[in-house]
Length: 448
Image 1 (cartoon, one colour):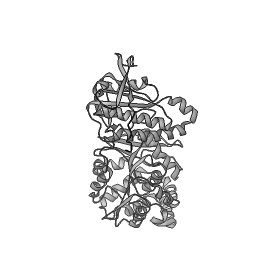
Image 2 (cartoon, one colour; image 1 turned 120 degrees about the vertical axis):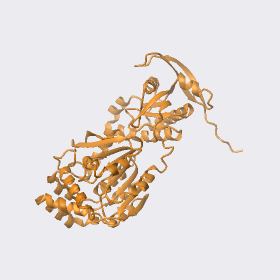
Image 3 (tube, one colour; image 1 turned 135 degrees about the vertical axis):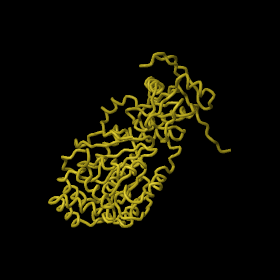
Image 4 (cartoon, one colour; image 1 turned 90 degrees about the horizontal axis):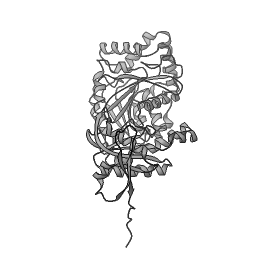
């Protein structure tokens, strides 16, 4: 599939371009500053991105000043670029994602993972560095900035030679042409000023996501010692040294991709992020009660923080009961999950209710069963709409299920059902009989 370019607005009003395609667990690719979506989807490097997107919901963003993102910017600060990542994830509906990043993009993503651990599940860093001194220091960077400022053609040629020391002349030429097209020439001095002042080493011990560091042994633009240093400072990091000298992850030997995808998929089974099933499914829908009033009372930022924390707790409740949480469904828009077992769906709903109560955020919860259609990591169909309307009909903290779900789960031990009669649900032609779920008290083991 060819990606469609989408746009979002960062915190300072800068327009950021991104593209998304595929189906499965989300993977966000943060490129080196000079690259673009157009570069990575061009025929000569497309093979890499197609492999990375297999079985994943793959997103790629153009950094500010590059590609289809806004070019007339002056602020390339770390804070601005962290806000760009968050804006893309919010707009794409990704509450959390695996992240793959390259070179200076890796430095930005290290800071993002450390400061927003709730949003990064796994982190892959390609030829990373954490401070300017690891790639030549202020003098070398200032020299490159001056060269770019006075002779951008010679500067991009030098840049390409550093990134691709042993590539074929055709690859170097194509890369150099893409760099010229993909970047605003007047921003190169600002970019090198950003790199010269960069030092995210204090953030590295705070990275919580499992991390894989990949580095080419003979890399010139980013020496391998920089990658080793990053791996040594990140608590849960692994280091894989690859032969070659290209800092471009899509050129040279791509044998490492198998190890990379294996790392991303570790522990994925049972975590609720697999492909949602087609056909008949049990559908759980959850939404925060009175979210508008709560937002007005505590403010947008505080509400988002509480909602994100709760979102993680709900996904754990869903995963532990064998469900699949549909990516891109954040609280506020509703949490949607599908199950193959009515009992597991009910247990997950009760777990969600407890998580909401613990967070001080009452939830509307509805469960229904019916046919669904799977498409690009989401599920659709009338049964999904009915589940959402049943949730709307529930009181805060209450789990309502349809007659269908009650029939499927009526012999399950540990729960009972209270008949709430037939309800007229908005957008549903026929009244639906609903039942409230009451969890029976859990027995505790006693010492003899």
